[in-house]
Each structure stands twice: as C-alpha cells, then as structure tokens.
Image 1 (cartoon, one colour):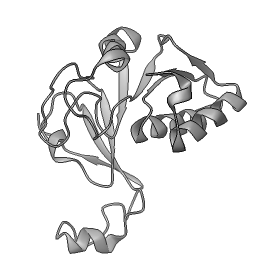
Image 2: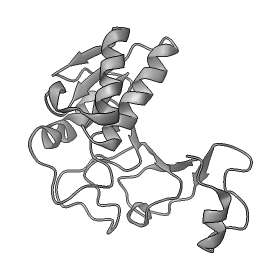
Image 3: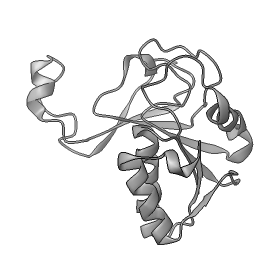
Image 4: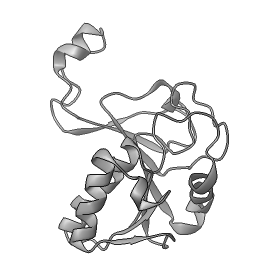
Length: 178
C-alpha cells in the first residue's frame, strides 16, 4: 500500500490511515511531498509515530495495488507545484486503484475546477458532507462520506437533514453523477 502525504491536514489524515493500516498488518510505504522536518503539528506527530513503528518512509513512491492520495486537501490555492505536482503526475503509473482522502489532490473543492494536474481517483472519502466542487467531477470516482462526529444539530441547523446521515453506518456512499 502506497500513501502519498502532504504536510497539511490532508497529509496528516493520510499518515493516520497509514498508521491504522500498519497496525492491521498491511505493508505500508509512505512518500512525503516535502522534507520530513517540515511536517509539524498533527502531521509531524503522526510521522514520528510511523517512524517508531518502522513504517517505510521514502522520497520515492513505490508501485502498489492501492494508493492513498493525501497530498493536498481543501486548502488548494492555484495549480499544484513542485514535488506535489510531480507526485500527482506519477499516480497513474503507481497504482491501478486510488483512494483520495477528502478530495482528489489538485481538484478545487469549492469550484470543482482543476487549475493544474489533478488525481483521478477510483474513490474519494470525504468528511462530514460532500464539498460542492466534488459534485459531478470525473476526478472523484465513487464518493463516500465519513462521520467525523459532527453533532446532528449542525446538520439540522443548516437545513440539510433531519437525522444524522450516519445513523446506520460511519461511512455512507453518495451518488455522484458525472
């Protein structure tokens, strides 16, 4: 399993996924988008834990059956640049199946546009609610939404649903017409 992780919150989520997978016996290979010393806060803490666990952390990505894309999340501003852009371009050669966390890297989740290179995911696991820019994007693949413990009252206040969309499961599939 290959995980591509940026240094922001999205990358931190990818590193958490790598930790959970490694704890379940999956052979995980992590590739960072920048120098490990630039990972601070939660991503830095998760990276340190992975190092203590002996998870492979490398400058070069490895081919695998499944790749987790956690390079760039909703904070995308303009086209991906530098190492992140290089890794996005390499994704099709690295794995036949790609799971993007929250959004395919390079997709603007507000406007639904691709200002530069973007990952084409087999599936996207977004958090709490689908972002507007995910709707109808061919980069998203199958769309799933995961519960991150948003109180049901928030959904009700927003007039979105009367009950939690996660009443029956912590991850639900969302139809994404493309």
